[in-house]
Length: 269
Image (cartoon, rainbow, N blue to C red; front, side, top):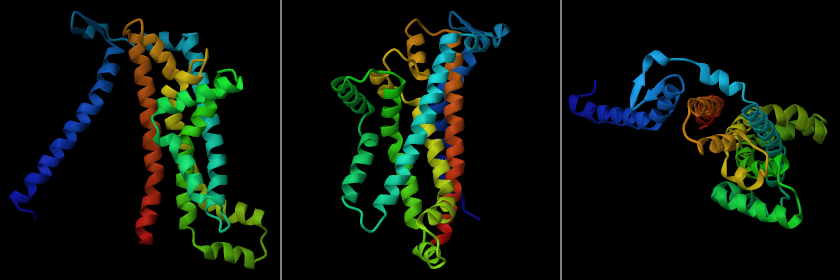
């Protein structure tokens, strides 16, 4: 058993952890509270508890359209990022890959740069090419942004596979397509699913890139920003709460999907 002196640092670390979590998530709780009760002159009127703001929000056609746009962009950009990420991972891990490091720098750079730089660069490029801004340009921007996540997960998992798998597949007479379908993709499934969840999470919350290339199309974060210009209403707090709950749920799902990978890594060591 640990002595009293050894338990003091553990208690302090636990207290600090609780304090940090409280500071981080207190605004979420406040927004959720203000979406169901009325605040008058700094006083919470508990008797006004109601879910009417959520009902009003979901009857708002502009919010529903923004939600549909967000879903379209998130799904399309995640799918495109996964396809490009898988293809690039296979190429960079091949023996005859040319410019492997340069390709990886180009993949990671948009993710590491401030989103405002990426968004402005896309705006200048699309304007120079005469491409109209809309959902298509938003999908391009989000795909470039989340490509690094999909590529990293697939590439890391691909590098961890033993070469004996491919050798055994070739010895059994399997073609390259059969090796890809029956050997590689099943082993990469966990990384692909995790990459899809993370890509959806990042795309769902991305605002700065969308601001530059969305044109007259609204995603949910952009709609929330537009609503905030007229003041904080219960509907805004309800929308903030829903966005945060969705983001946290996707993040927890991604963390849960990543956990088996950590366990496998530990066992392999």
